[in-house]
Image 1 (tube, rainbow, N blue to C red):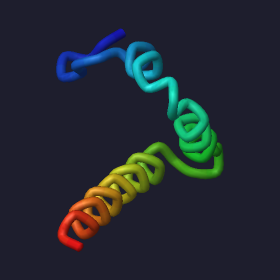
Image 2: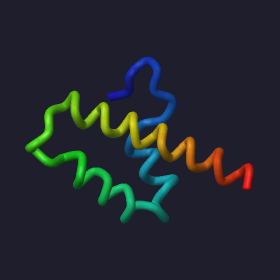
Image 3: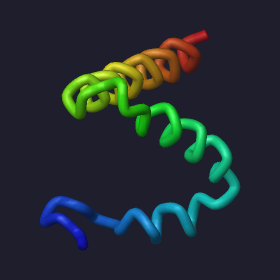
Length: 62
């Protein structure tokens, strides 16, 4: 099921990004840990995304 703001389905995204499937699996294994709440997981993913974006921008200016 797609949400109204979702451009591509998760299955399609996995198909077109199959070369990074092992990394995706590692991230999902970490996220699926039952000891964290949905809110904690969502917040952590948001923060990691911001950190990655910052590192990419910082590395571009080197």
